Image (cartoon, rainbow, N blue to C red; front, top):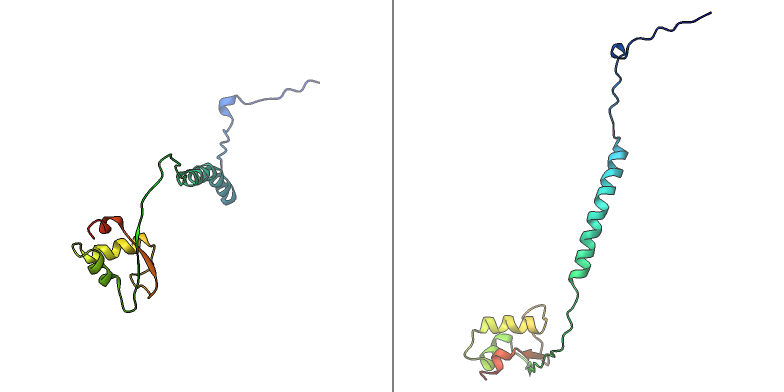
Length: 121
């Protein structure tokens, strides 16, 4: 008994094309895997960019201090301490130097005067 199987030539067989399909979950995993190195690189860059540089030069800036009198404002102090300077610039420089939230000062408060204004006094 011989059984002869008839096989169709390869060109006659229907070709089965399988298409790769990504599910929503698969896309999420793939996106996460691609994003992790990018996020890590950004984090490392941000964390390393804030390093302080220690040098051998010490800052020898000495400030003149003024104690705020009752009823005084930074504008009045500007007119007294730096009469030849722009009062609004003086006020801004004092606020920045003393890390003040506003330009409002309280009686008895001790504030540093920026060095560029003490030279003219």
